[in-house]
Image 1 (cartoon, one colour):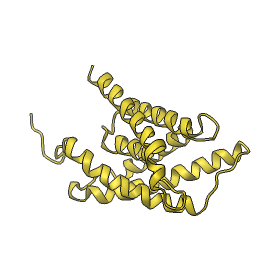
Image 2: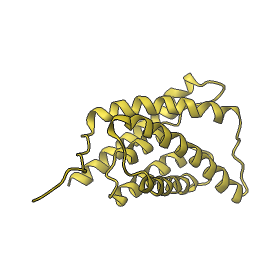
Image 3: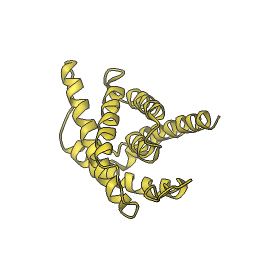
Image 4: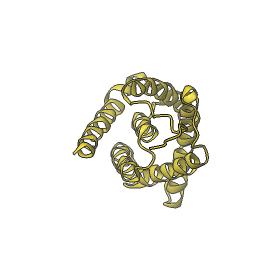
Amino acid sequence: MKLVLQCILLFAVFFLASLVQVSFLPYFSISGALPNVIFTVFFLSIFFANTKSYAFGLFVCIIAGFFLDLISSFYFGVSMAALLGVYAAYHLSFGVLHQRNESARIFYFLAYFAAALVVYNALLWLLLKVMGSQLYVGIPLVISMPYSLLLGIIGFYVVNQFVPKPANSNQLKLL
């Protein structure tokens, strides 16, 4: 029941994020660049989620990709595929760096978020190139990356207030 409630709430959050991205943020564009709110919510969801819950991560990829595909002019499913690639890359790199220091969590978030945003745009460009379409890689894309990073930092501190801190797993458990 808890997982179903989380999924419904997450769907509503992605819906609101897509509304904000399409209707409110175009008034604050810089050289035509907008922060990617849906990607930010996607990354916050997988960053703060239980790392052993692959089903939840796949659900987040599908829902975020659905809303990204709705607001983009690309083929339907391209954003879902790119987000699945980002999710796979995140979990592969997370396995290497699984010992995260909680006091430096923001730095891990910034590094992962920036890398995931680059991987997402690269995968989107590659998938569209294979399909015979074109993704404009220029000034708006370069400006939107720090713009999204700023939104990600704000989102990190907001979500960090509501998500419980992980327990110290280095403690010896005798019973």
